[in-house]
Length: 431
Image (cartoon, rainbow, N blue to C red):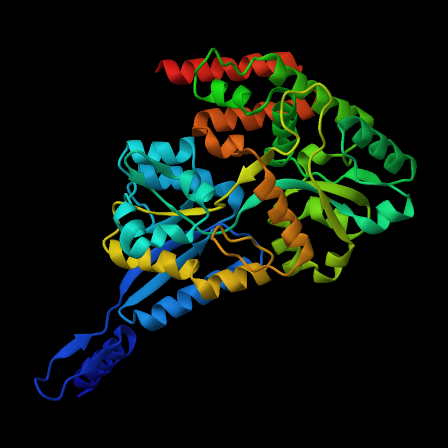
């Protein structure tokens, strides 16, 4: 009797745990099992996560046979994690990527789906900003969908501090140096910066290269054309200008060990210790999530012009898709995966992204916030948007760029760093 009761209990437990149900007609036990789509996201602690959650919920409500398994990954860990996924053939179904060298590597090894047939169906591609879509399009197809944001690096500043010290946003680098001096004299940290992972400081370096030499300097060096070299004098001079800011005390003490993901730089802005921060325009979304009461204090201006430089002062550093979403070739449900991406950037999601402080990469945007509109104006008038070096370059070159840039901030000779970067590039492309 005890054995029979134990067997009955085990049977009932099996039904409870597996979601099986009893069919009275044929006495079969059938399992309700949903098909799964895995989704990676890297939005950190921002209001956009709520938008993504809502998109997933709506997708699942309208596709009841499917369940989305989302994994939220810190931005600074993501590239290495995805490299492991590629190496072990365990790719997520839908995942964020960037244009440039990273995307080209996925294309060359056949890791991602050509989305052209999906994008051209019902003229869906016309929904997106032309410049944004161009960044993931080549002669063979369209490889990802612009989703998260049109984001460029700009200087955000505390208007209360600037007004109290009678400071006007600078138009030139020489004027910026004067602003830094005045802020230091009055006890403020001129620029908040947390550079442990180096991509934050890299923004200064990239702007200096662009303002000094124009977009072709990096393009030629990265793509090994027209005699381009990472040891070009523009790269060396950019490193020297970075060190000029360091030596002036433009950054907080210990900045090279401070953590961006932990909010070490933003906190200096929030508590009025720092007056400025060079950041991607995603900062607005983070601000609305973390410190909405601080919004009224924030102004923005572009990176200043450098007298005698070849770069157009309207050029920006950033991306018009941040992030693009791709589908892995290993995905078993490609049609549904593309539908999931569409939910991430449909009209409901676009409206919510705008409310969260983002600028979705779609046409006919209706934005009322004046600060967001100002950023959009900078994007629209920019003759060239230079994609972030660390995301454009292949992983080995990206790692070298970040490491060497951080070393420059730490006092490494800029000429030696530039020559070391060129040597890594030569070795990489000779293999």
